[in-house]
Image (cartoon, rainbow, N blue to C red; front, side, top):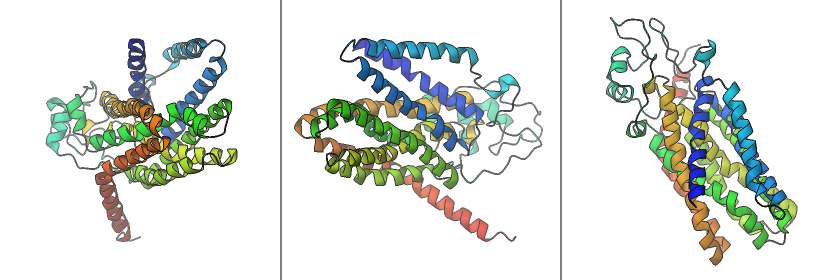
Length: 371
């Protein structure tokens, strides 16, 4: 158990870093599709891990751990040698940095919700007094200030300050429950199929991989919808609402035919993994580059760690409690997962209302624009 805890600690340190690196290269408002495609590596890794474990579990089970470890080590060395963490290191502009003095910042794109307009005092709290004195909230330097950028030395923000960013608490708690559902499927799905249907163990393992295939599609779909609508919380809620009855449908009809199981698993994978993927990548990066943070990459890593760390607790809790419940009845496991999705979407209600009001406001503004 101690080694598992150490392994989890080591693996958890990677996610905030990689999300931050991708966020450093792509500006706000266009990350949904980018992160959706990029995040497919998690589902592909789950599929590969399942196949590796299935290949060695009956012959040399220790290789199920050794082979993935070798793959991770080799790729880690390659990344260390070739990865450029931010554009400035190769002379390219940072898409998250505010405009310099004398240049008006571009208007906020319609697909970048901020969920609240942070007052200037909050900017001082998040950036520090020195940076806040040099910059006003709208990104312009105050009169009399020197044209030098205040972003030369980025300051990391604290855990408490990250929670003050509008939307962080809601998305963190929502991810707790949505990731609980996703990881319960990931760890218990092969066992459920094998014990609750007429399919063989080999068929059950192969079928479970289709959940991650749906996850790849779901991540990209959620990212595209979020980019085009500018409503990430609403995108998550819509997918969660549809996922709830679809999980019950899968539970009721999983043993009808092999083809029906394949179809339902892919649909459930799309709907369950879409919101989880969107929150843990594009939403985390957008909140980590909130206007009050002035493109601070260190702040982005902290916000990502807070959101994904909260979700990881749910990922640990879900499979843990699914075991005892499944011994009573697998139906109760699915009821638990549906209840978790209900709680997840309820937690996003305030943000959805904000997005709807913002959408209506933008429509009215466009209606009053004279061509």
